[in-house]
Figure: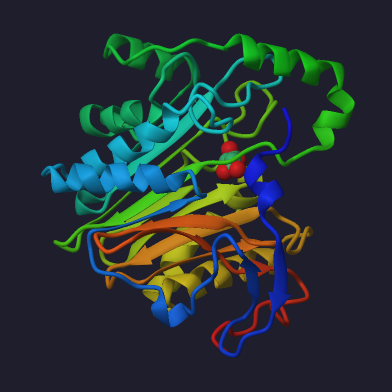
Length: 340
Ligand code: ASP
């Protein structure tokens, strides 16, 4: 499986701009000043350019009178259904045994409720199964065979375990295993967070995880606090990137906690990466990215390295933006104050 195209087409130059810790730019998706990063609810933010149609589907759902959870589920289902997306849904990259195992979670600000599934095989919409776990069981997370049995019992839509194309790519990978194992650039996630006009906050997250992972491997995406966190007093955050480097730090929870302390969502994403980089032997070489929004309709994102693109949708506009990218060189002393 070749690296994902969005990593190939982005070209940037690194510039320094007063008031920002780091600025990375792409001609396709310019990065606006932090002061402009706000909009009125309904406001939906998600990871990557493929989040934009998902955001728009979520907004359409809200306009039809759907709830916040309906909107998150409907938006993410669109991405899960995309047969060209190699990192979300059943078209995702298989694990090392050639099996696609999906991870997802969903969270409601009202009631602080959450549900998730991990290592789910053979079902098209893990986000919907995650919602059902939240709404009809006393549990938060079902995994593997238990998740599959739950989805089957509840009549969720099945899908092919692997397509001929996925199988071919997997076989090629098996042949080149030694080389492919060294590659980490074979994963992505849709994390989506939404602020509604009534001030309530919701989020969801779905992925096929790290390509060619060990069977049973679970990343950050279905783990509440790691790949997603929603706090109805503060806002919400979601992650994409190398799950192992997010889940060891409860990354999305940390972003929300920084917002609680008063940081703008973009500063909170930056400060979270700086905190993680300070502690981690890999420093900024972590391949992690966050999105966030707060109750005031402010939003932002940040990633390591060159940063990443994320999607922002409101009634006013629907756009793909470039996040700041953080490296040891462009954020100053690790652990410093990002607002200076
Ligand atoms: N976070 C996902 C995982 O590790 C992959 C990604 O978002 O790139 O499973």
